[in-house]
Image (cartoon, rainbow, N blue to C red; front, side, top):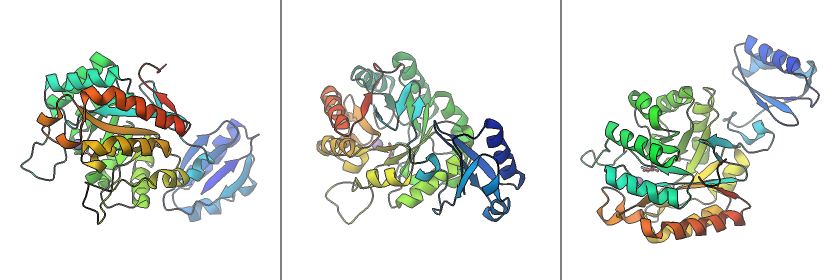
Length: 345
Ligand code: PEP
Ligand code: MN
């Protein structure tokens, strides 16, 4: 249920509505806009309906949210899109953010070199995995704690906010020490205890769409985080499984405008894991940016031929500045402002 307040509603009237929602054990999620305040009531709808809030002071109308996801729904923000602020970089609305870095943290030299490339080219944030979800249990699983320590060094050196994956709730404190954004990988999109824990942490979260998940399932994953009172959620399309085998995954570009209709949350795209090979990364990135994505998360490596994982898809460091310039132009086509470290206030 969504309670739309009148433009003239006073803070006391808003508080009174919140108190009444909470008095029946439901949760109130106020969204204070410039013009109107909208309060999402989540919980036992029968109890909320019995409150007869229609006539309450300051209330304009009650609108049922028919989608199974409530807090993620576009309606909750009265049709506007959320803008997240992460370490001075904005993402969402008109703000486009490029997140770049290697697939995984391999060594001090590798990660610092990648960081210098990413910072010099003006990307907004740095990515790199210390805990890696690998299909094979025999493959490199990431440097773990040592990887997190190296990411802290990247942050110290470049000032770039860090995006890194969390796979296990037991590592959340260690990851939270360095991560500005916690990545939930595609394979963990439906790990509900992990989502709830990240929700409770309050840390910004990037949720990747599962390999075979629908957009509704992705939005329900976001709902697990939002339900804990954590509003800093962004969604990531990274390619899905289809019958096509000519490339790694099928990048679902249609997901961008459709998610924009369904949710207020920022939508970013990972062209690297969809493509599986370098030559496809630039065209997919340009298409995603021009289609209105709020950002891109892309892999770049100082020496992809020697990379421990995902070498064939990682951009080469010496091509990266040119790539960034192209993405910036494509983002402008969609009316987006390309936010970079240099542009950050
Ligand atoms: C990654 O970003 O390194 C990764 C493993 O991505 P995904 O979860 O989308 O496969
Ligand atoms: Mn990877």
